Image 1: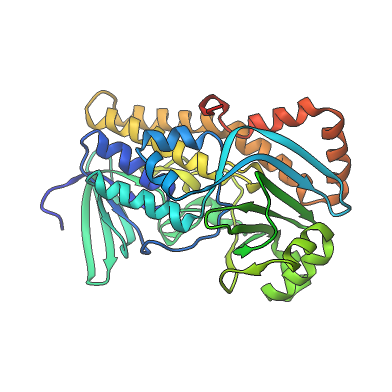
Image 2 (image 1 turned 60 degrees about the vertical axis):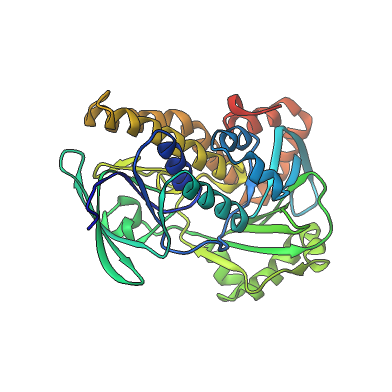
Length: 385
């Protein structure tokens, strides 16, 4: 066990975990971050940085490194129904396309540079304790089992994890009906646009990232995946190409950068607790936004900022443990409730092309409505125009 307690232990080194760690280190907090894998690695993600991410990343001191990675610039979004009906709109600011392989590495390096004790290949197996007594984290590393002691804990371990089972989180008791897939391609350019292609039971997003590559990420109902592909990703993708001709044409003209497709099952679009057993949850650990909104990365960065600011107040003795619990929960829901609810409603249409086509006709007839939907699925107050 560490001789000195950490002020904060963070479980998970994705965007939310690194954002919280960097903010905390900037406030002279002693931070340890435990990441089960090692960087860089690919993960299932839309890899679309909503316009407000620019402000949030600049606050983390990442602007120069981000620009050096040469992310793709994205100004518009288009939704294409299976019959070709299309709606297109300008985004409320400049968005970026960058792989998680690159961005997570930049975030981790920045956290290390700020003084965070960043421990990859470190799996948190159990968390015991509370605000009153402090926390003991049992960890597993390549060297064996060990313990870490910390005054506070932030959970940034993603959509679902073994630590969620240890915490007996309620959302795990319901089977979730969605599968996510992702791959990178070299293909026809999509200059300045992110395209969302609908098909029965799912939808697929295409957006350019760095190195002239295109990220192809999709969400599909588990039953659709099984019925059309028999559990085979290759068979499912071939079926999907026939369901939306525009998507099929693009994929047929593209070449994969790597094989096979990355997959994730049981993606949970359900309400979760923002605080459980005195652990503050951030990013997907607190709630997963439907990818149609394109704001998952923005939410992760913003939640890390919210949690770290309140933890600093608590550790300084300015607020009580009970105030920390209540205020974080309230601020998290105030920041993200509208986005979560609206994105789930929009996803209902994306999964049902018969509903989507007339919906796109309405958006084309009433452009203001589409602009409102785009604006209310992100924090437009942070957008740099």
